[in-house]
Amino acid sequence: MHRYRSHTCGALRASDVGSTARLSGWCHRIRDHGGVLFIDLRDHYGLTQVVVDPDSPAFKLAETVRAEWVIRVDGRVRSRPAGTENPELPTGQVEMYATEIEVLGPAAELPMPVFGDVEYPEETRLRYRFLDLRREKLHKNIMTRGAIVDAMRSKMKGQGFFEFQTPILTASSPEGARDFLVPSRLHPGKFYALPQAPQQYKQLIMMSGFDRYFQIAPCFRDEDPRADRLPGEFYQLDLEMSFVEQEDVFAAVEPVITGVFEEFADGKPVTKNWPRIPYATSMQKYGTDKPDLRNPIEMQDVSEHFRGSGFKVFARMLEDPKNRVWAIPGTGGGSRAFCDRMNSWAQGEGQPGLGYIMWREGNEGAGPLANNIGPERTEAVRAQLGLGAGDAAFFVAGNPEKFVRFAGLARTRVGEELKLVDHDRFELAWIVDFPFYEWSEDDKKVDFSHNPFSMPQGGLEALNNQDPLTIKAFQYDIACNGYEIASGGIRNHRPEAMVKAFEIAGYDEATVQERFGGLYRAFQYGAPPHGGMAAGVDRIVMLLCGTTNLREISIFPMNQQAQDILMGAPNEASPKQLRELHIRTNLPEK
Image (cartoon, rainbow, N blue to C red; front, side, top):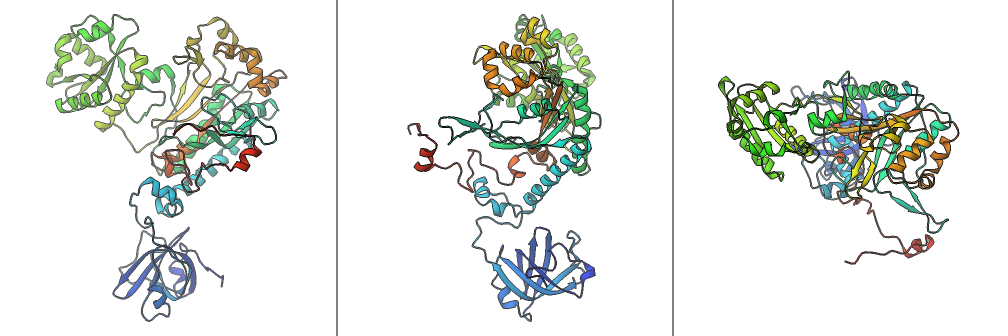
């Protein structure tokens, strides 16, 4: 018999009754039932109930074992007594009568329990992550993550993509976040950067004559952490294709992402035919470029019903052509208590309040706004929004560029509060036609709004002749349930167009050649039209595991302060290391 086990803790079945077996694992739970000990023995594969009674030679040692001790157990497999079977366990028809126990690894007093699903402070969970990972839910999430990555690989290869690995030590690149820099010992005073994304490399792969690339790529960005973005590093399903237009990318990617969601959605419905939503439409209807389409609420522009009305606050705002009034319909929200609650919530968000109209029996409008604009305008608002008795509408006004984020939050709040959101489904959509440029208030200049390597719609002619802030890009995102899970674009593969695009954003040709020399040179020697995207592995796994925190699906994450408190990173370098790297530290004063 094997030194440690003849079976795993998830393997024994009724067909094994009467045989002898050897198991090894962790003592998940120990119960004393009138002198008879029951040990739930757990390993990676499952859990088996072990019984030790006072007649067993193993009883004396069994009395000393505690939770999370690692033990080996020899014994006989027998059927559980009638009425004690556990249909929740694959091994629930049998138990093991222990005849011999060996302690392989005793455990100290636990800083947190493994049995059960009790919430513990994140600091404790991350410091003792090896214990946290033994817990059933987290262990299952990590295994699900691996299966999802396997499925992605399989489906990408099925679409004709080939996997490549791009360098980890590379040059700094303006991807929109801070780089992690790595000092070079061999080249004093110079630094490598960890890749924010394999953007330039994957385009260079297309320049090199390969046709369809993908990679489960590690990416590194020195960003502030938040629940849906891990500090430091994350993984993406990165891909690129040659001789394609936007629709070709969609046709290749949509079956992969849909297939992964369907495979791991646990029966929840998944969007079959993804809608294509222009960026401007998404912002106007949903107040965000990553809409949660499980929420049926669509905002509408109702400015004309308030222009010149008796509600002077809105009427005066609308004298400025930039200003608008948007309505957020709330089906079933026509009670004073709910409207007051929404108004209080808006004030908590730093707003002066949230105007509303309620509709009573006979579709009669009620509330201060209805009284000010009169029954005719109130009826016109109701008719446009398709509302009726028992419903309400909420209003935001001003310059949409300034209020759009709040409007989106209000739409989400109304949908959740009124239980209009169907949480048991996955709604996927393409968001298209992103603006190529935006105005940077901090730098007082035009800057790239998305990916600087994308193709502007209209190409070089648009760059030469169009107001930059009106140029759209062949850029697209995938939104799912309120999260951006992928982003990409058709690339700007003509060197003169690339130089012009960067020139508008304030970079001269010399800077382009210096910062993107490899890509710029490659474009001179026959560049195929190409495009691609990158999907966030971590966010996709997070959604499919039904959590809202990426730490629940990452094996060894950092904490909110970007520290690995299990391994003690970041830590100080020794004087010898700093000398070898020709570096001195210049720490801020405490």
